[in-house]
Image (cartoon, rainbow over the protein chains, first blue to last red):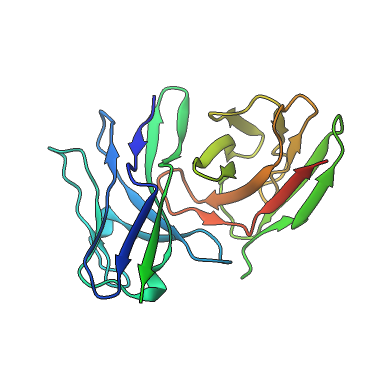
Length: 111
Length: 112
């Protein structure tokens, strides 16, 4: 069963527009969610994690347990934000103790 | 860009051959992972290891095998039983499962 859902494969916005990359999860435990980013020709890297409640490169993400969501937001998109974004959730149940990644959303910020 | 390395960067294999992808880390991490990245499918977990001499199957382990004889190394063998091996393979490591994962640069495998 899919544990992390990113419903949009591609999100295209203009520079300066707000961005919201959606992530929904299904997990009965207490989730600790991550957002990873992969810029062109670079390694996949951690962008932020909900437990630290920090803002990285202007991005924030709030865990909403009621809606089981962890959407990534930025008020004003920049061209350098164009990348592939993955939401991830550690699954720590019987038989599995690893991160599960969503299918990813490609963000295109147009000039 | 040190920390976790993968080799080779590109690998070509004939059908029916086994091939081993290397993954090494000097971050003193206990946990290591192998993912497969296909367009439109994101990252899918192949195998993971929480500690030396132990590893577990992920979501798509069929046709793959791993070993974890040393803390620093977690090689992945793509066997001839893997029906669609052409893909981009990523290795990662972390202190524990809940911690940030650090990724290698990846190996692109093409089966001819």
